[in-house]
Every structure is written in C-alpha cells, then in structure tokens.
Length: 314
Image (tube, rainbow, N blue to C red; front, side, top):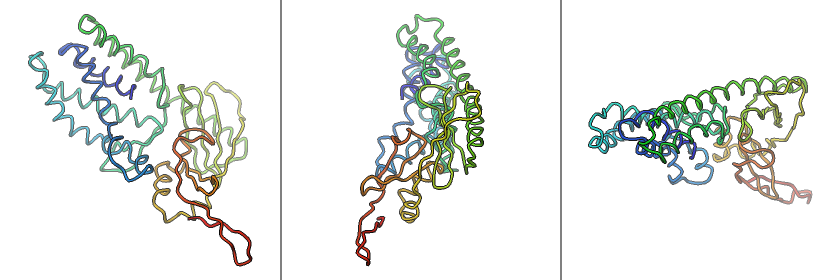
C-alpha cells in the first residue's frame, strides 16, 4: 500500500501538480493509487476465497478505463474553480494512468492479478519484483514527501516527480532482466544436478533484485534453488521437498484446494500436521514457512479389517 500510494501520488504530481498544486495532486493521486486494494474489505466465503479473489475485478484494466470517466469528472469539478485552465481530458487521463499503473505494478509481483477481467479470469504474475523493494519505492517517496511538505513553494516538484518515475521504471525493467539471468543460472544448476523439471518459477528474494529462488516442480517433489545474478558457478545446492500429491488425489473433488492449485499455477504442496491436511502456495515464503497455508482436510485414523490402524483423508 505504501508503494502504491507513492506511485499514484508521484503520477498525480507529475501530471496535475502545476495546475492544482503539488500537495493536492500528490494527495489525490495517492488516494486513487490505493483504491483498487480496497477489495480486501469485500466479503468472501472463506480464507481461500479471500486469497484467490484478491486482486480480482478491482485490478482489471477494463474496469479502470470505465471508472476513470466518473472519477475524473468528479475531480475535475472539484478542482476547476481553483484551476480554470485545468482540462477535463488531463484529469481523466491522470486518473486512468494512476489506476492502470497500480494493476500493472501488481502484475510484476508474484501474487496473481486479474488485469484482463472479465475477458480472462487468469491471475497473471510476472514475478519480477518483491512486494517491498526499497530501490523501487525510495525515488517515489522522495518526490512525494517533497510535494507534500514543501507544496507549491517547490517549483521543481513536477520535474522531480517525473525523474522519480523514470528512475523507478528503469529499476523495474532491470528486475525483469535480473529474473532472466537468475533463471538461466537456476536451470544450469538443475541440469548439473540431473533434474529435468516440469516447470520452473522464479521468485525474487525479499527487498532486492540480486538474489532469486527457483521453484522446480518435479512430479511429487519440488526443488528450491537459490542463485544470485552475480554467481558465476554452474552448480548450486538443490533443496528437494515432498509435495505429498496423495492428498491431492484424495481431495480431487473438493473445490477449495483445487482453487489454491490453480491460483498458484501449479506451485503448491500438501503436508500433514497431526491430523490436519494443509496446502501451501510455494511462491510466497520459504520452506516450511509459507505465507499462504490452508487447512483443507483431516487424516483420520480408522481400524482396518485386520485390526491395524489405517489413514483416511476427509
């Protein structure tokens, strides 16, 4: 939310700051920049639905295009008395830019974003950048704090906002390149270790773009590979963990875990904790502490005909 506020505020300052003042432009832009994330307050049927439906229709580029007109019209009417030369089209365009850049920035993270809803219900995720990366956010924060604190007395506020957007966007482009470098090194290590995975997903490690984790799905196991873009070695440790797909088969007709499987794009694993059957999205967190883990069943001990205890999944 801080990064999205800073991004929206910086765009607002760059586009509208000269006409309505840097402080008003930053506040309006920042509030608009957080608007799509208010979907966290929508009612959902349960924690799994809340997990997979976040970044849904409120992050759609088509919805943003529709909302830009009424929201932009409202802002134009609000500010036109103070800025008679403020054009309606400029305000509409600023609103559209702020909303769509929110969705596009979310798209570059690991958490899936339905940017093409309702044409597509696919949660797209480029996984270029960690959800908090200081090198992306800091230039935006400097520009925003200057606009909010100094206000109209800072004659260079709009120019500083434009420079901050250029720096942050350039860094975001670097993260996409860094991901490709990291993936090449992960695949080298997997090949050297004799692993031929079904798929490889690259995840940025917290707060940086130099260290990456590759998740290699290999049947009933997944393999974590940690590589730096600065690492020149061909080999690297391979950390293999079970996916326990026997529980996947047992729960095949139960919708909640199937929703997690689909949302994670195949990057999921089951595990047993006592009698609880848990499913985790492997993309967020590290083994065994994954951020999104859900109880989806129980392994109940029942007597067999031979009086030996057996397990049954419910």
